[in-house]
Amino acid sequence: MSTASPSTTLPQELALITSVLELMKQEQQLLVSADTAGLAELTPRKAQVVVDITALAQQRYQRLAAAGFAADDSGMQTWVDSHVEALPGWQALLDVTREAKELNRINGMLINKQLSHTQSLINAMRTPTSGGEAAVYGPRGQATPTGPSKRYVVG
Image 1: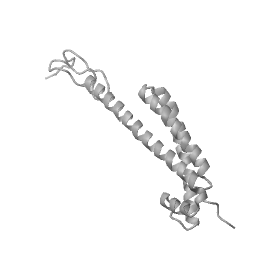
Image 2 (image 1 turned 30 degrees about the vertical axis):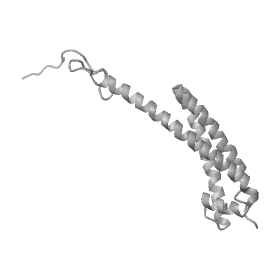
Image 3 (image 1 turned 180 degrees about the vertical axis):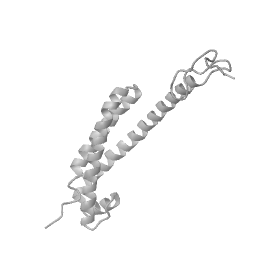
Image 4 (image 1 turned 90 degrees about the vertical axis):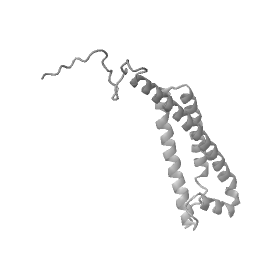
């Protein structure tokens, strides 16, 4: 009984990582336009594809281990070095994965920029601009009263 080749999953992995790449391009446009509804719809789809990719990679790693190689990407590279027919599929997967990682890095920067902007707005609403003004919102998001206190001290 022969073991399935570690390269068996490469076409499916490539299709899925290409799908993630396309979703990340859409995500980038949604981030730039601050379309939170679109992001809310896209994020679960992207997460499911990532789960599917991870499952396929685990299958590949199991097959590598069964063939006597390290169950990781370096083991796959070692296996591919002696199975050159798998090289184009492996190289294509690596190339698209690198592109997806770079796009993920850029999208992360866009998210951080948006978070920073949002935090600045929240801080501006919480903090008075001058000593005589009251903050617009308290730390829990409730509106703060302005004017004299309505509390009375009974003594």
